[in-house]
Length: 221
Image (cartoon, rainbow, N blue to C red; front, side, top):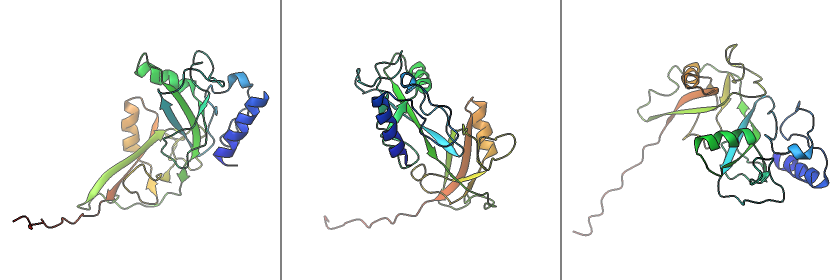
C-alpha cells in the first residue's frame, strides 16, 4: 500500500474510533489507542527508511482532530508541502518530540511539526573514483546528510555506524546532480557528530555544464 493509502486508512480509523497501526514499514510496534494519535506517528521507521519532517507556524489554532496536549492547538495531521524524498505522503502525523525541539529553538512560537517515513534508495557499494569527480574544473562539492536510520540499514557502513547505509543513491532535488551510487563518508559523518548530530553523511562532486555567454547586442550604437 502507498503512503497515501496508509494515511487515508489511518484517518478513517480515527473517525471510527478504532485502534491505529503506524503507517511506515513492517515490524511496527503494536497499535495505539486514538487518544495517542500524533505523538510521533509512526513511532519507528522500518529498515532503510528515512524520517522526514515538516513544520509550519501558519496553521489554524483549533481543529476537530487535534494533536495530543499540550499541543492541542495543532492539527493532528497536515498535508506536507516540503520534503527531501519524493513522493510526499498525502498526510503526515503530528510529531511531539520534534515540535518540542523546534519550539525550544524559536521560543515562544506556535510551531507544529509533523513526520513520516520514506524509503531511501540504498545501493550496493561500488569502488568510487579516487576523487569522486572533484578534480574536474567545473566540479561542485555536494553532500547529503540525514538522521541515523531508526530501523537500521540493510547494508550498514560498518560496526561504528550501524544506522548508516554503506552506499545510496541521493534523492532527486537534494543536490545539483549526483552519481547513481555514493559511498558513506566517515569523515563528514564524524564532523557532524562532533557537533552533536547523529547523522549519516555522503559526499561527492557534481559537474556543472558551462553556460555560453551571449554576444552583446550592439544595435544601440
